[in-house]
Image (cartoon, rainbow, N blue to C red; front, side, top):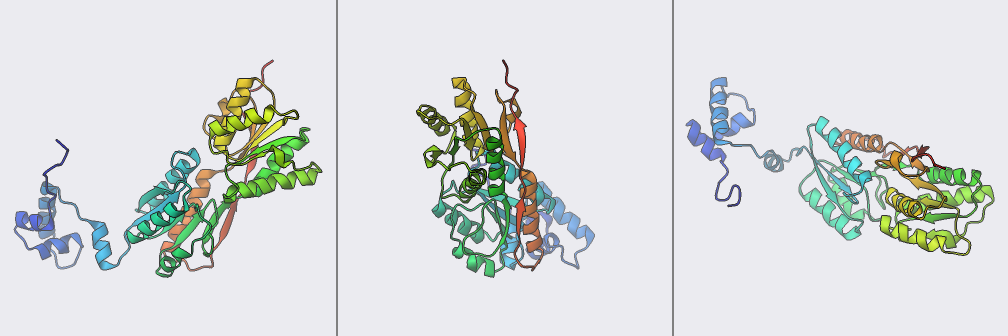
Length: 337
């Protein structure tokens, strides 16, 4: 039997009947209205407790036009540890503000993103935190004008003025490639997810900046687009090292790419240098040294969430863009002889 099948949830009418009062009296108790004696309130609450009755706060808020104490978070891929960390940090901030967080994943699909954002708005959330998949967000203009604050995280919005929290993608990538060039590398393979993604473009531009700065030619034959997971990263490594003039270093533009590069090079037992954008869990235990471009994901998400709650509270300042710095860190186990 399905749990709860055939069981009707108790209603306000049931509570009124059980307590021997009117439905209006029950409503007054749960809405904390004046002119309700403490004895009457206790009687109603006791009946509600016995029956297992719970007030539908969302429905009440929708009827009254008040805030719903809910916010929406739209991320790209819930399975990616980066986005899981963002969701956890935002949930923590929402909890401190006594607000329920509704999280959805667009899976990098612009149409799904629009559908999910419209759905969240129809649920009358008090605000939205968005990691955008698309570049065009004019469909949110009406919602923003209606008073729903929106903060964009990790990537900027398109066609919409809004608070935004970004990483220093370009500067961080430039630092990573400088590190390789200073170590003597001139043939650096660059593996990225999709050039259509803002963060990937910025990181690729940063890599080019560092090569130009060092007088090293930017060789497009060493760039691989469409590397979306560890498996495709490993395949790209196999193809690149089989060239007559293989790269001496690899730069993975996100954590999943870097993991795939590391796995394949370790399997092959070769010594190419590795730089990756994003730290990741267990990076300290990787079987060989690597350099990662790291940042505080939790702090970034918390800042975006706090900006959203400031807007919900009535902040009217001009939209801000906050850029979170990155740093190079050394990870992996030391090389053995």
